[in-house]
Length: 97
Image 1: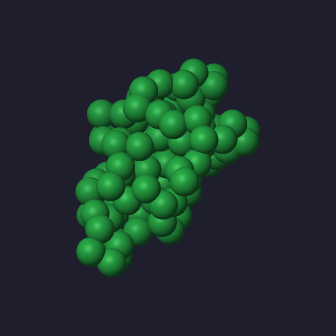
Image 2: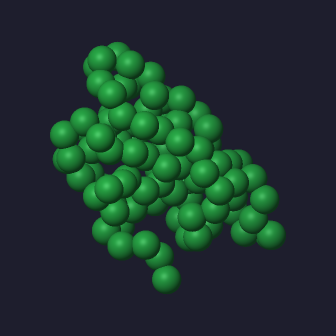
Image 3: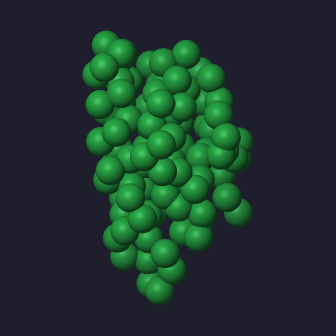
């Protein structure tokens, strides 16, 4: 089973924060899409993943695929990845830094 971690941090010491850039709405949209499909996957809020300027950010485990610059419109693509492993843009395949 794949697991999506979405940064929902709201404090970024002067940098853009994922939680203020729609991360909560993104999580809700992914969860709704999974429910609509009857799919089982984990979606979890987490703290800062690092690349604040690229957010909202998320990472899929165990695949280790990083996504940045996400929006609610990406919910279907993220659900695809969680369900069948299909990787979509925008993405990074390695953690930042």
